[in-house]
Amino acid sequence: MIAVVHHPDYVTEAPARSTYRWGKNGAIRDLLQAEGDRVGWHEPVAMPRAWLEAVHDPDYVAEVLAAQVPREKERRTGFPITAIVARRAAMVPGGTYLAALLALEHGFAANTAGGSHHALADTGAGYCVFNDLAIAAHRLIEEGRVERVAIVDCDVHQGDGTAALTAGHPQITTYSIHAAKNFPARKAQSTLDVALADGIGDEDYLDTLDTTLSGFLDAHRPDLILYQGGVDPFVDDRLGRLALSEDGLVRREQLIARLSAARALPVACTVGGGYGDDVMAIAARHVRVIMTLGGLLTQPPVAIAEQERGAGVVDA
Ligand SMILES: [Zn+2]
Image (cartoon, rainbow, N blue to C red; front, side, top):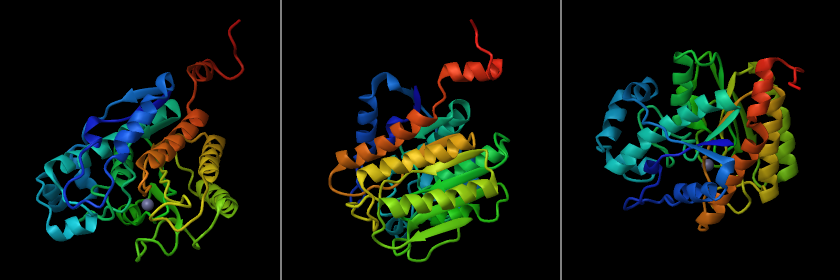
């Protein structure tokens, strides 16, 4: 059973003046519900304020939670921060954190939202309010759940906020593979950045990902991957500049699963970007990410039981 974290607060009406598609999270939930018994559902609680403040400027956290964000920051985020949006913004990092705990237990878990990798210390940006990846990573380490976390970001846009918010942290490393000419114009410095030329297709992308991510994981030896599985490298994505096919995206997840499984690394998956008019097609791509990774990385109860009994020992 694939562990999926979801909360009703993720699914909100689009606020006025929003340029972001808000229907995506509801469509992802519906498609996952159609998977029936393959999915086990978990509900998070909101991330406590202290953990939001561990990563973000307390003044900015206060602005968001009070739904009093200055217009300039709302413009940079891409939508107004209403009370409903604020509640969602605190819930999503709670979901990514819960997905990480479940991944440590089951090998894999997914949050049906999150991957808000552009959010910065004192402002939202690029449709991101709070940086769930950086917040969850900090909390997991502070609580002693893991020694080292790697944030692996395959969204077509660079994980600039994540890089900025975790820079210099000795136990958090960041990997971002993205289109060099895409948003954000001014890139931050991840532990490893892999900047791709426009129009890269399946074979070149997968070769580059395989080589660079293998080296990154071997160099930094994390205990857990927080994965930003954005589907905007897809060829027809409205905001992407790469040319991955539907099949290429599935092969990307198979590659992520192979590299993780080879190192016995649990993976907690977040949604990330995916843009265009056909919300159902985009949601289906996100669900394929979750089901592909979950199918390959979720440890069946029997395998866990056997591990506990010791390798090679099988009951008659
Ligand atoms: Zn993106």
